[in-house]
Image (cartoon, rainbow, N blue to C red; front, side):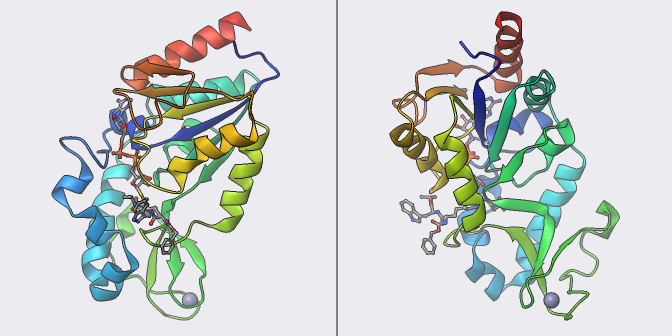
Length: 241
Ligand code: BV8
Ligand code: ZN
């Protein structure tokens, strides 16, 4: 079982934010159903029609800013507050882990509330949710070029700094919790395999509604809605420590 000295790392996906009202990518009401995500979340789509891509991100920004962290996000904060060394590697571009109070969060695929200048790469935040969409294509305060969402699109590489930080964390991790991800998007889907290769004693628990391609790798799959299973798991860890 997880002792107080154990280093815990979480890899989270859209399943952890589902209970907050943010649609996942797959599944019956998935984002990828309404929009062709693979079509829109690419630099080519942005090149071709920045208005359309920004419209889609404004829709998501508006949705996410109405949501709040759910019991699964809060359970991870509770573990950190109870003194555990816990780092979250999230594939999610929402800020619900931070808003729940988790302090060590690495965004493997970027952050939807951040914008990046397409020319000078300046990073800025949306001043407030009222500003979403005004003007439709926001421009850089430094060089006046178009801004883009500071997220990682398909066929774009992840931030090497974040990848290296993730790898070094995984190397020293005792327990890896894989939470609410279909494990289908690379290179994030490879992280558990790399972690296991680098770190033979690593225990991996998967929290999902169903099994995934990662299930054969993990020590245990805890099936059920993560907003229930993760709080139960965390209170057990704290009680038994
Ligand atoms: C790259 C940010 C190098 C944007 C995202 C062929 C084979 C293999 C790989 C590839 C290939 N062709 C192309 C690739 C590479 C590609 C890739 O992996 N494609 C996949 C689709 C095959 N990857 C890339 O392009 C990456 N970059 O490889 O760079 C490179 C560079 C140049 C040229 C070539 C290569 C970049 C990938 C990042 C894409 N950006 N998001 C935005 O969000 O706007 S991806 C996005 O989708 C998310 O970030 C996340 O990563 C992914 C969705 O995954 P999940 O989070 O797991 O969500 P999903 O809906 O799939 O699953 C939800 C899960 O939760 C389910 O399991 C469900 O059961 C569970 N669940 C639901 N509710 C609950 C629950 N569980 C518990 N409780 C609940 N209540
Ligand atoms: Zn600029």
